[in-house]
Length: 289
Image 1 (cartoon, rainbow, N blue to C red):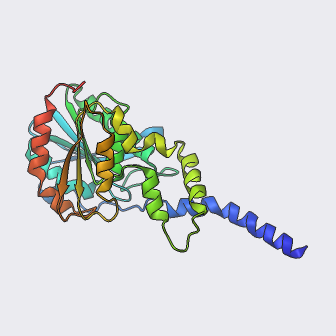
Image 2: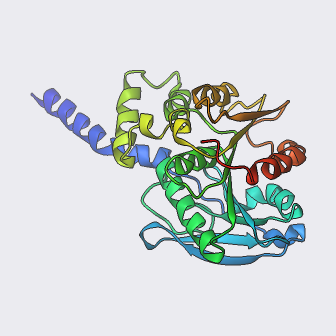
Image 3: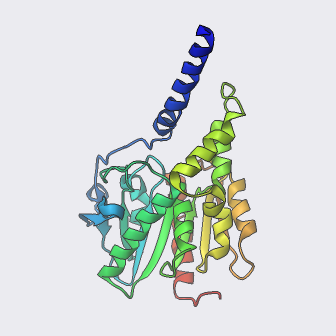
């Protein structure tokens, strides 16, 4: 009888600890900025944008020579605005405004209960609203890295005020990301569905609903995907999965960066001319349908 009680108590304890452990494992690491755009000789203003539920989003606005376009840069998981600065300089040199911000639970932005792809997209929506309030007639280009790329596609699949999307090192489906992360010899495979179902319950969305390879069918603006051939975090095959699911009327354009990994910003930076040319080419085009 005592053994049964001990086993029952152990099971209850594990069930109680399960959510706590998962929240700790999947909590985004917070890295606070240690520099500003001034380090790259870029003019800027810093402000807190009003985010969802009254949360504040720390941001930098780097004004361009022209006020007709703003490029919004969306960082990845556990990153911050500073990590996107090299790309910001490229767009600033092309005369565009650049808006960088920290998602909730990242950098200097306010804390929230958890981070997720839908919440990244919500934060992006607030950044778009702020940029539009400055100049309602301007064009909006969203450039996201990793989960930031997925957030850009999720937002663009619901909104009509995003003119161009550029996704850097973006994943095709949360299921793929989770299966790669959970592929551990010490983790029983039987626990994977339990973990994934719990995460979907917490964030309030099924992965199928928010997967970039599914949302791409609902995007009406031009999309450019950029990926490194040596990305060990999100393999380049994810980029091709997204492309294959795009509508024929709005084909996705691709740039493969030879030898680049998931965070190879310097190598991506070397292709800045291609990115700028693509933006200029598509910015004034009429929507494909």
